View 1 (cartoon, rainbow, N blue to C red):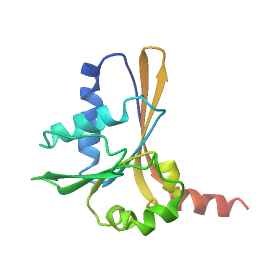
View 2 (cartoon, rainbow, N blue to C red; view 1 turned 45 degrees about the vertical axis):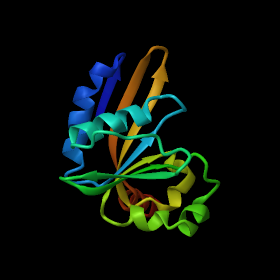
View 3 (spheres, one colour; view 1 turned 180 degrees about the vertical axis):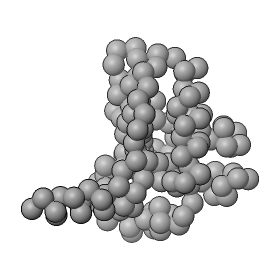
View 4 (tube, helix red, strand yellow; view 1 turned 90 degrees about the vertical axis):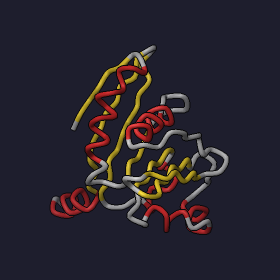
Length: 151
């Protein structure tokens, strides 16, 4: 969908603008990137744009809940410490993801089976001092149906 190459935090503005438009339609945003790539920083900028003044990394809590006048409860997940999907289910985190509320997910590869069929994927790749940011819409059912047609 979109690809950006940035070298400063100030250059996040067009990315934030595009993602704020997308959250009007898509409530699940998955942020993919190595440790220190800027996932939490980007989520913080999106939250500022939608009226949430303070966020923190939920690495130890696994999920933080923020209040937004526009979106109600907003969930910010960091699944880095989880071993598998079962831990998320036992903690009730899957219900939060399925709630219809806006959700930002970091390290979602650890709970990939719990992701909905359609979501926004934000890939952040570190390239020296730069960050390459790719935004795409993932439609799993469509991909699975296409795979079945080719078999």
